[in-house]
Length: 168
Image 1 (cartoon, rainbow, N blue to C red):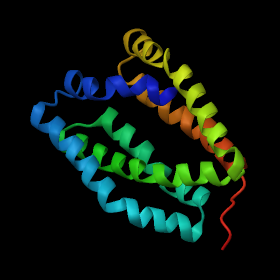
Image 2: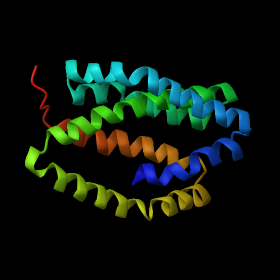
Image 3: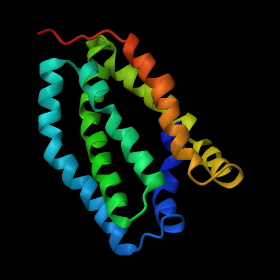
Image 4: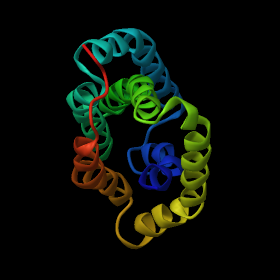
């Protein structure tokens, strides 16, 4: 939900609040993609070596730094750095997906993925409206700060309770 509340507004924030131009937006996206490409395999290997949950928890601060840098960015270079850090987040999605499949019995994985993706999609329908309300009535940076808080205070503690299924 909270990612859906911020997604439509990230580039709008960069342009309207941080005064990024088209070149900076392009460099932001390119930095994210380059970092994601360069780190996907090493992060996957780390997940195989030390465990999925540990890898996610180890790299999650990159997500928080990415959003906080977006909010406080005093210059276009910091916006680009923000998105480079976001590339690490994209690289951890493979670890998340692997862990998500490993915790569910093989014969129930299709049903599980169908159910979880349906619920995720339904919940994300009102999320941009919520993000827009936060942007309009609280502050344009608040959806991003809220994402960091919700992830840090709710999502990560829930992740901590999930058993590590990787057998060394």
